[in-house]
Each structure stands twice: as structure tokens, then as C-alpha cells.
Image (cartoon, rainbow, N blue to C red; front, side, top):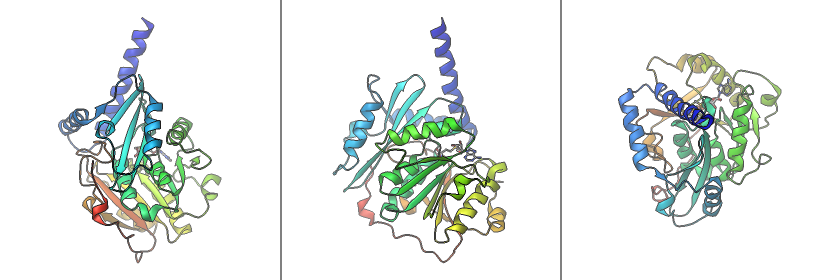
Length: 316
Ligand SMILES: C[S@@+](CC[C@H](N)C(=O)[O-])C[C@H]1O[C@@H](n2cnc3c(N)ncnc32)[C@H](O)[C@@H]1O
């Protein structure tokens, strides 16, 4: 009796998570359903016997593997138990392959599962991986941390951060750091709340890159996000803020805030970094969502990093 009540509760929570995702899209529900259907058709569900450790082992074995990924493990989503699953994102070229394992929790907290913007930002990082190596990076509102963890696996010195008021998200993100063979000493997870000038923000040290995936989603928070980004960019004049933004409402407008806080913003078309596809890193999460890649800086004369040669990018 108790077990069946718990089972129904978990089912309701899983459904709620999907409903939140759909509500936050500016697209119609029909299109969302189409995207979800497409996703479940194409994702390879690994046998339920598999567990998180299997995915982690695959990740560490394949982090430096050459020559591509066996097709049977691409797109894998591994159920760990009723309310947790591990997604594996695979970024590969003809020369190298990096896999990122992200554990998702069926929970109403936005930071406990991957949003469609995250694989798009991760793809930008992957595309510019030669530029990212060795850089000092912070991810704001990182949630499960896909872009930041990818940057760390590519050799950046990364700090992940989420709201200081959401310890559950910070703890979960630490699990994701460890699920990728990294330690939280190498990749610290800090409470950095947008718009709050606290020691965790002041003590960050020099930065080259600021990352943010889907952190401009709630108009009431836009200014706090921009204030924090502006503070970090003015402290680190050469740095850039790479952000992915999901278009949910045509009336949302960042222009006034960018001007107020002295930031310059460029939009990078998705086809410039091979992200004009519903499937990224082996995941169909981006689907039909309209996502923009934004690069913000205080110095408009900064040039874009040089992209790798086109022929080094290969899609699985
Ligand atoms: C839509 S989710 C995006 C999560 C993740 N970046 C992704 O794309 O999958 C928004 C994230 O912002 C975090 N967040 C919400 N309010 C915040 C605040 N005031 N300061 C810092 N992070 C916040 C949430 O906990 C959540 O992780």
C-alpha cells in the first residue's frame, strides 16, 4: 500500500518536472509534445540493470578515447532508481571524445535536471575547446552543471555556482562533479546568489570566462543576473560572459539592462558552432526550443576566439 502510494507520488513528481519544462517554452504544447516524443523515440534506454557506476566507468574510459563512440551507448539515459536517472552527453570529433554524465532528480527544483539551453552552451564550449583549455571559469546558476563540467573535463579551472539559498542544488551539483571523475577540490561548488554581494562573490579571484545556461528565464531576476555578470566582467575586463537564452516571450528585452550596466552583447547564430540541430551531444533536449547564444563583454573590440577547423567536428 505504502509502496504504491510512494510510486504514484514519484510518478506525479516526474510529470510535474516535464510540465514545468513545457510551461517555460514559448512554443505551443503540441510542439513540446512532438519534441518529447521525438526524444523518447531516439534515446537509447539502457537495460534497467545498468546503474550509475556503469555510466561513470564508460565516461572515464572514453574521456580520452580516440576514433568515436560505439553507437550502442550514444544517447544513453540510465535509470538509477525511480526518481533519479543519469544522462550521458557525448562530444566527439575525429580525434577526441569527451563524455559528461549528469544525474537528474525528479524534483520541482529547477536546478536538479538539465534544461535545453545547457547542451547548446556545452556545444559552444566544445566548439571553442582549444580556447577554453586552461581558462579560469565560473558557471552561474549552474543547476546540474553540464557546461561547467564539460569545460573542466577540457582542462579549464572551473568553479560551479548556484543560489546560496538552494543547498539541495549545490549538493546535487557536487554529486555531478564526482560522477565525472572530478573532485570538488578541483571543481568547487559555491553558493553565489545573483545580485547578492557576498564574500563568495568577492573571493572568486581572476576569471576569463563566465558561463550561464538558462539563467535569464524570470524577468524579475534579469537585473540581478546582469548586475552579477557586469560586476564580474568589470573586475575582469578581458573576460566574456557566454550565456544561452531560451526565447519564451517576445516581450522580454535585455537591451535596457545591458545599457544600464555597461555591457555589450553579441548574438552568435547557432550554425556558427554546429548547434543548429535538435540533437546536441547525443541528446535531443534542445529539440524545437528557440535558443540563443549570447556573448557579453565590457569591451566591444574583443575578437571572437578562432574556431577549430570545420573537419574536426563530427556528429554521431
Ligand atoms: C532554469 S534553471 C537552469 C539550470 C542549468 N543552468 C541548466 O541550464 O540546466 C535556473 C538555475 O538558476 C538557479 N537559480 C535560481 N535563482 C537563483 C539565484 N537567485 N541565484 C543563483 N542561482 C539561481 C536555479 O537553482 C537553477 O539551477
